[in-house]
Image 1 (cartoon, chains in turn brown, red, yellow):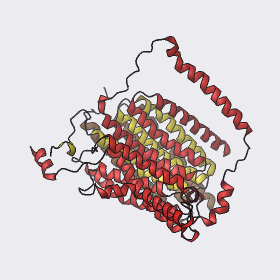
Image 2 (cartoon, rainbow over the protein chains, first blue to last red):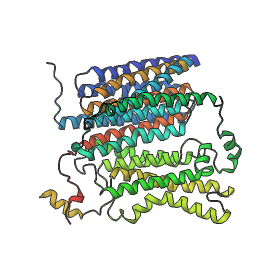
Image 3 (spheres, each protein chain N blue to C red):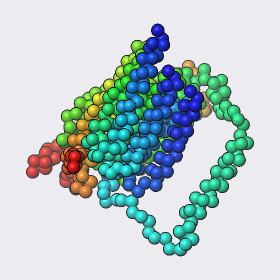
Image 4 (cartoon, chains in turn cyan, brown, purple):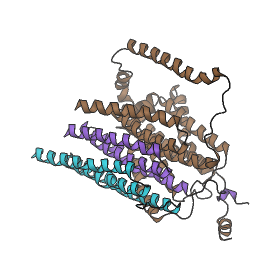
Amino acid sequence: MMSLIDLFSGALILASLPFFVAGTLGLLRFPDLYCRLHALTKADNLGLGLVVLALMLQAQSWLQVLRLLLIWLLVLIAGATVAHLIARKALAAGHRPWRRP
Amino acid sequence: MTGAQTLFDGLLVLLLVILAWVLLASKDLFRAIVLFISFGLLLALAWLRLKAPDIALAEAIIGAGITGALLLVGLGRLGSAVRCRPLPVRTTPLQRLSAPLLVGLLLPSIAAVVLVELFTLPIVASGQIKLVAAHLEHAGVDHPVTAVLLNFRGYDTFLEMGVLLLAVLSIWSLDRARHPFARDQIPAALLTLQRLLLPLLILVAGYILQRGAQGPGGAFQAGALLAAGIILAALCGHRLPPGHQGLLLRLALSCGFTTFLLAAAVTLARSGVPLLYPEHLAGSLILLIEIAATFSIAFLLAAAMAGGHPVPEAKPTAIDERKSA
Amino acid sequence: MTSLSLIVALILLLTIALGLIRVLRGPTPTDRMLAAQLFGTTAVAILLLLGFATHSPVMTDVALVFALLTAVAAVTFVRRAEVDPMAPEQDVDDVPD
């Protein structure tokens, strides 16, 4: 029984890795800041979400589950807002979105 | 398992050293600030790996949150008028060689002295842990770090409050405060974020403050969190209401220091030793001082952000007229 | 589970190291700020994983504080930059009495 939960958690943690790696690679390789912004939010939403889900399965108490959920929701909301604000500011400052040449 | 831990620690140390070097050498001030924020994040991780959660908490709040915001505002205030200019050309070869010589000769010799001294030290240094543990039951709190900071070596924290107060007083003597953020055109998404984050920041600050008696936390961390809340409110265009910038603001800034001072004066009169709390009152006294210090730290950090002494607000009508004109 | 979390935490630290390249290269301040934003999220994940692996619940608190505060620096960046540093100050203290 325990090992099944462990298996699930392990799989979820492993599944989070591609999102963080993709976020970083996107940050490095994508051509302009709007594309990079797009790559970034994958790590916020799914990468951290999967880690939180995995650790929620392992939590000792409901309080811990709630704290983990709160952390994820905070990062989600703050990340989404900041992404919006940055894109808005960049557009206002006259940064043109990249087009395939 | 230990292999992964060792690799993690090694990479962390390597990254910290590289970051420190690159950020000090950076000519682009904005790049240096972002590097500094990243440095703060990693430093908090390092403190946790060193099993110092109190410092990690403080570093996470100060390093990753407040200093970043403070430096960004400071850079905005400098404007594009100030850029890192290269130093004037050095003339003699000796002057040109002085910096590499200093670094090349002095640093290795200092390192050698430190290394030699390192090996003469006892392998297991317990420091003051035993001493603190022996007296913890008289401290009024259960967390040894809080006991040291507010009871056994309370004068350290007392003087630190004084240093913070002095820092803000010197900022006030430099210039008038300028609200660094635009008051209008606040994005709706930001307002929503503020409505959500501000109550949470206050709640978590309270949680961290009260937990200082039993575990990692306390006045400094709580005050810094509150300061982040004030900064967030300022980012959304809020300002101190007129009439609250005089005595009330000064009271908020200094109440941490004055509460400590009063406690020192009363204990001096009672027992002849400043800050020697009577055992049955120690817990309540520490909590009282911590609450006052939390408010002071919050307002002191936020006042540093304003970058100068407060100026009386002009009547709102005057601004409106100017805007519409 | 614990060793897996440690290894994943290590890989996440490696992604931070890689992401530093974007901070160094830029080219715009926004690009650099984006990288710092990603570091914040990654640090939260590392903290949670390390806290689980080393059985120290206090790491969750530090992660919570990170989650609360990573937005503050980024919002400061966005809001501050809206004021053009070369433009004359439009603030209240310039209003003649």
